[in-house]
Image 1 (spheres, rainbow, N blue to C red):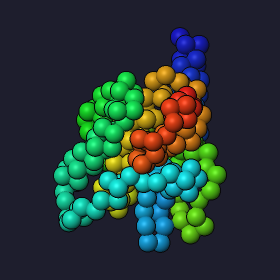
Image 2: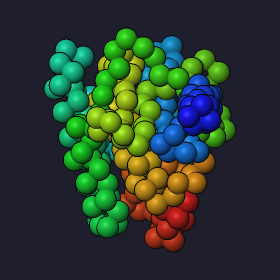
Image 3: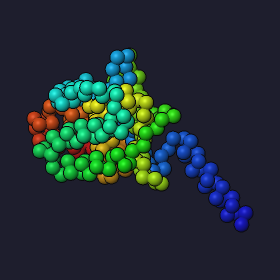
Length: 224
């Protein structure tokens, strides 16, 4: 009996050590997180910034739309609006890639019930960004962490305070980022970086989604 107890104790300590070291016991290699750039006068999704600065994509006019009195909405109405905005962006993908759009749409339909807003703590950064450049005056912050649900069905943990600082179109961008990431992880448990996820998200939010040659689109998709 003492041997069994000792073995269980060793296993328990081993799993605890993995948890404290930041190793996920659900998705195994990657932090699966969505990040934002917190600057002096702006807050935006890292995907949106990279789409324009790194990949030279042009934002779709819809992504520039401002919602009146958005800051006064309840968190429930705020989330609803962001989900609807994300759906509008994804509808543009349907003409380009109906099969992928269907997969993303299914994940979007479950996004609300699989999300949890964290109110009294900050999320620790995940080491998956593989970033080439950010503005010197901006800070990279963790907005969402994605995990494979174990107990209560929660997949997306969201920093409520940071979430409410984002305009609706940026919130929608973060939702799409997590959906693209989730679909990719269903196929590839070895996904080590979110760079390809951010590139696909940026493309979905851009004017170039409708005009990019099919051969180039396939390259972006293949990287996921």
